[in-house]
Image 1 (cartoon, rainbow, N blue to C red):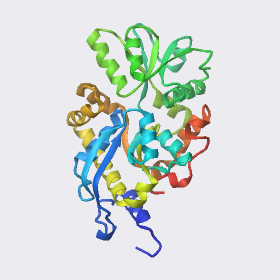
Image 2: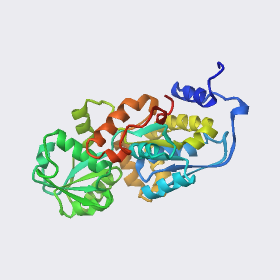
Image 3: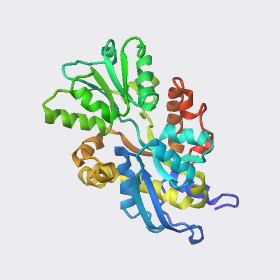
Image 4: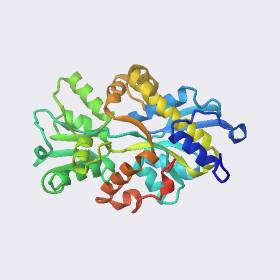
Length: 332
């Protein structure tokens, strides 16, 4: 290592090169008595749960545990207070926190698209233009699912405010019983709510269809083959400065965990069902559907910036009005 290369930069380079498992100098390892890795209330958190359960952080943290933040407000308050330092989050939320001075960096991307349009009973939707004149349920107005939906509608030549009726519900989960009951023609659902809808529909003898893949629609309109970099692992600057070795080790453990999840869906679902407060069969059904691929944000920067620009065309404030500075992308 040459003079002037910082401990953090050296570790980031190791991780980006897939060498984060190499031993680091003992003097660099600032051990932690306790470490909590926070997941988000969605299926991709299974990667972090497995990374912690694998014991990969044991050499660096006396007690490593996994937990799930429940609401975006809890996550933001925890980051500001310092109670949440290493956490999964929607990528736009991490960018927003960074741009608002909260000292957040995005380490990696875990999921590359988990949003689907479901057709209700008796409704046929073969392409996006078939939404014309329909009522479409969408959760969380002005949040990423809403903005992504509006983006692909506009790209396809549909005016979201005139050519169809967007009907908003508080959360995506609230849309599931409504679409099963035929209260709307279609609904935009992320995983695992989408898999829950399919399972509950089968149990009720109701025919609903996973009609459109929003990620494919986004790729077709933008030419970005990697999908939508919707969520990943974030870290506060304060934690990263103090424990770059832990961040590098956790990223490497995420890469390993992704392979384990793909090979062991049943065990993976059992691992995360409790923290997510969802039945294991719903979680297991959702695992192949959220495009699991772990990539450092240095690798994913072009895709992240394209995604942020797409969201900003509809609501610049979603990332606090500008693209994040280069320092936001870990390993750059």
